[in-house]
Amino acid sequence: MATAPNEEIMIGEDGNEIFIRSWHPAEPPRALVVICHGVNSHSGQYGWTAGQLTANGCAVYALDLRGRGKSSGERFYVDHIGDYVSDLHSLVTLAKSREPALPVFLLGHSAGGVVSCVYTLEHQAEIDGLICESFAFKVPAPDIALALIKGLSHVAPHLRVLRLKNEDFSRDPLAVASLNSDPLIAREVQPAKTVAALVRADERLEKQFPLITVPVFIMHGTVDRATVPQGSQFFYDTVGSSDKTLKLYEGHYHDLFNDYGKDDVMADTTEWINRHLPSAPAGMAPGMA
Image (cartoon, rainbow, N blue to C red; front, side, top):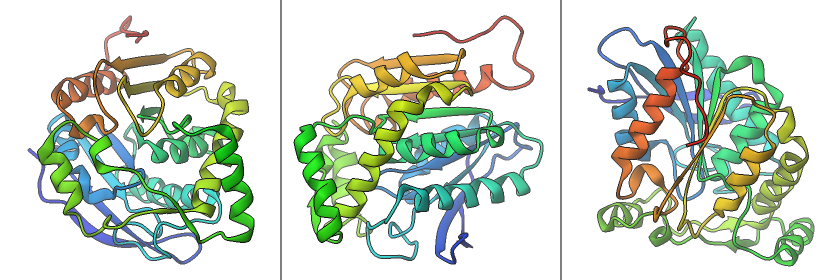
């Protein structure tokens, strides 16, 4: 079982104070999982996920991106996706220094999946696999609206333009109640500059998915109303990895690890990780589920 998380402050590459949590199994870990959260979220929401992963023998590290959770910075604001990627790179570097010689898996949820994919493009040699959950590559907004937000980001970068409903994250009323009572995401609305940074990152990824060649496990709920499952399908179809798996969960909402059926999602995740450990039996290559 997972121990209580270790909580600390990490100084990022540009001096920001980045809050991180880490969990360790009772026995020496056999893998390292680094988690990058999305919007309406922070590292403190990953206690159950970390508990399941540590039970599977993984050390787990998660950060609060700048301006989110308990990290420093203007609330929910980022100038460029590279700032988030810098935060994530600092965490991966720290985690690898503390857990040397372990295979490293990056788990990104929603907008954290965008950050994780850009990180992977730029630092593929640093990780052994990418797990993309409810990838925010496509969102349920017209292209013209996204174009307007990009334009607005130049003249009113701090204007709050996008709010996600916690009710769209999970069918479990207890999970939604926990989100609604979380003071770290209370009144969370994304500024125009943040949304524009994510849109521009998605435009880059659309062209550069073929450059990603690490093993990837892509997950999405079919009734996700915050992001679009077809975006994960496009990622699967165009990614350069020969070792790739897509799993669509029928009827599931946006936050697969906090929705009904999360045990099945976690079982698929740990099974995929186990198949990608150095000790995995030969011939167990993953395929499309």
